[in-house]
Image (cartoon, rainbow, N blue to C red; front, side, top):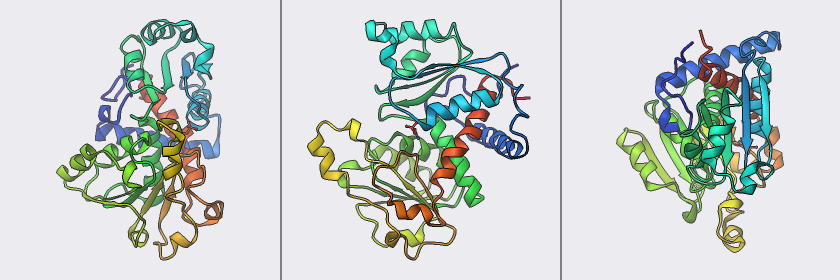
Length: 314
Ligand code: CP
């Protein structure tokens, strides 16, 4: 059966159309609701299918939630938890690996530290490939998880005031998420970062050209009471040229209960996780803290992604 999605590989938020988002979030909601009553009711949907899960960089949420999603759909999983244990270690190219692994699986999810590496791999794959993070570039399935979480708690995806905080230069989840949020009208984007970690000017231009309001700040200032969504991010230590440069910015933003004084009662705080120190532990008890729900929702959204990309959606 053919997929109803407009893309074959999910490599970038640029591959995704608004119609794809609506289809995937609708399916994710059905999986979320259905699994609350019967965790096994979807166990035939991907029966006989195999997911290859290839991680050349550390992961907890993305790898486990994709693997859990495939298991919940009744499929099987081949996993490469550490790229160094594959023949890439012996010098095999990603293109050859794409040719080989796509003979063993029906769909592949891959994370790699190099920009555009997953795209290169996909060009030699005979089966759909999902980019689970390619260096600082993109993480589109995380953005679908983020959109689902925003929609679940805010009950809408348009007309939102959204604050992005932290590493907006290397943070691939922000890079992908703003492109998807841009489909929904009348957004106000607040990009709050150390001056050395600002979002790329091309993204700001894209959003302004589409009619969204964009404000760039280097401190929280008095913006928190304006926000519907506060999206925190980790400063990406692994992307800095030196530890000294990282140390200069790593503690620039730490969200505390005090920083949330005056926030809207409907505020939702998200974070793709892992959290290091940018959200104080005390904030976990705040009613706006939604990041652990967001991580759990990864399974429902990735069930939807796998099910649709395998062309099994009816
Ligand atoms: N959100 C996310 O990508 O988490 P992991 O690095 O644990 O996969």
